[in-house]
Structures are given as C-alpha cells and as structure tokens.
Image (tube, rainbow over all chains, first blue to last red; front, side, top):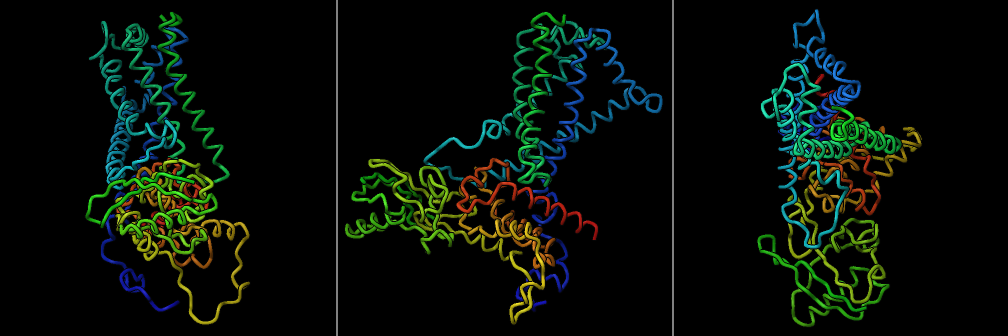
Length: 243
Length: 249
C-alpha cells in the first residue's frame, strides 16, 4: 500500500467518531430516495390489490359487499375482527408519511440546488416526470377525500351505510363532482406510477442498460392497468352498468 | 454569417448579472462556437470594452474545460463539447442565448465562467486507487474481464465538464459521480476502496449542495461523452451494498 497522501480521511488511523451527516443513510440523497422507492413500491402493491377488489363491483352487490366484509375478518380466527385491516392501514400510513417527508425534503434541496433558472427556457423531460411533485400532492389530497367519502362516510353524498360498500360506491359516482375528483386523481396516479415505478427500480439499483426496456414497459403497463381498472368503476356507474 | 448574441455578463461572483445583446458579423460556418466568441471578444477589445470571460483549454473536446448553455442546452444543440460545436449548426440571422452553467454548487466567477471545484473535491473524496509507486506492474498480472473493462472505459470517458449538473433541473451531480465511481469500482485495482469510495464520494457530493436525482434523464442527454443514465442505477446499487456492509461491521 502506498503511504497515506491524505490525512483527513485516512482509514488506517481509524474512523472519525461520527460520520458526516451526508454519509449516513437518512442524511444522504440516495438514502432518502431509497425510502421513497421502498414506500412507493409498498403503496403500489396495495393499489394492485385495491384495483382487483374494486373490479368485484362488476359481479354484483352480494360479491362486492362480501368482499368488503372479508377484509374485516381477514386473518381470523388468529386475528381479532379488523386487526389485519388495521395492520395494513398502519403500514400504509407509515409508507405515506415516509414517502411524503422524503419527497418534501428532497424537493426543498433540489430547488435550492438550482436557484437561478435559464433565461432561454425549453421543454424538459416527460409530462409524467414533470408532474411528480404536484401530482403527488393531488393524490395525497384525493386520499383524504376518498377516506372521508367511502371509509368514514363523513363527506359521503346521501346516507352512508356501513357494511354496504356497493350502495356507497353507486352514491358517490352518481354525483358529478365525485366522478370528476376520482377520474382526475386516477389519471394523476397513473402518471405518478409511470415515472415512479421506473425511478424506484433505478434507485434500488435494479435498472441497467439491458433491463431498460423491460422496466419501462412494466411501468407503463402497471400505470395503464391501474388507471383503466380504477376509472372503469365510475364509468360503469355513469353508464348504468353498475347501479 | 451575421448573428445576434445574448450573453450573460456578470462582473464578479457578488455582482448582479444580466444578458447583454451583441451583434457579430463575418462569422464562417466552419468556425467553432468558441472561435465565434473569440471574434466577438476581439471586437470588444478594439472598442475598449471588457471581453466576455469563458472557460476553454484544449479545444479538442477532451479536457472538459469549456462549458456554456447555448439556447438552453448544455454545450449547445449538438451532442459534443462547446469547442467542437461548429457554427454550421446555426443559421444566418439567428439569435443565440449564451448562459453559464446554473447550479448552487457551481457559483459564477465572472460572465460565463463558473467555479467547478466542487467536482475536484468529490474526486478527492474517493476518486483514486491505492497503488504502490515504482515501475508499472506487468499488464497481465491482474486479469480484467472484457465486459468489465468495457464498462470501466465507458465511464472513464467522463471529462468532468459539468454539463450533467447544468442540464439537471435539480442541479444534481449524480451522473458525474456515478461515472467516476463505476469506472473504478468495477476494476480489481479499485476493489480495496470499493465501499469507502462510494460512501465518501456520494457524501461529498451531497455536502457540496448538489440536488438529488429525479431520473429526468436530462444529464445523459446533455453529456458530450455519452455517459448513460443507467450509470446512476449502478452507483445506487454500489451505495446500497456499501451501506449494508458498513452496517454489518
């Protein structure tokens, strides 16, 4: 080994007592991105399960309501009534908070890193990429409304019936604003997933030159399937297929 | 060719800058962009004005000294360095905007010159290998698989010009840092510092105030040496591996 030509970070003399903040996991931009990637993938997994559940609405009120009931008895008799559901909710809440906090901190940093804009502006990057931040905010606001509408029933149009999700869904999508909010939010989800899934793969180091096309196709496919799946429900209510 | 230039003029790091408009005439389409600026500067000197300051050195596209954001593109409309960009890429009567690299970590020194020493400090943090001094070792003593050699060479092409930072909407240096890390980390010569290299260099990159990566891909599009976007994923993989290893220790 060559003699040390640097003294400040020489490993031979032992590590400094505490690494600089940017070398720790959470202190690093890559660490925060990793948190975003993992939490994002968790939420994406949930969305896939959610859309499959939603599509049961096409098989009539009995099957749909029974599915809603099963979500509460899931894990029984080992778990008490709706414990499994609460477990899912807690994990999801943690994922949302981790995702949002990292996104906020990284965005602040990114804006600070480029304080002066170019005088000669031109269109940069794809629509999905440019709308990640505001699209994320739109989706977050939607989730609040969605829970108040169909879980707690606080913001539900008409009489909210606990245990009758089929009727509640039909009520919500019988209002024009219910449809507008939902469809806009689902388009935002699609765009967010399109760039987010591919980005998560890059952040976790799964991406390479050979997998590029596969990952892009997967991201686009997931985004399309989720958006079409979710949007099909309000469209079905509007057209009278589900009533 | 007759051109209208809007050039960023700024007296020093603390002064406010602004775009100044200049007319240049008698430009040959065979001139490089920098030769066109030389022509402007000769005129400015004759008029007794302060010439436009810009970085340049080899003018062969291999040193990484030249910069300039031309019409919103780092190194201009062609995929090459500004010194290798020729005026045939423009048309007679065009108005061309010339701005310096924009990033908090690259403060403007004067006019179009920015301070890129943040890159030097990232290199100092880990962009080296430990090797005994003396005679060069026998070349076949350390075999390197062809695929690894190609991968290392692809990343070794980075000339550290900073176009990636200039093009990135977040002022992120991920492509530069990944090129330097991938170049050394894949080779057996770089193996002894494999973990500390990625942790130290990424740590320094963050400490310099560069932004994070949002995978817009602008950097790889602007890179005159064609460092590919998946380099960033390869660096992330190395970083996560080093984090796991250092956590276990």
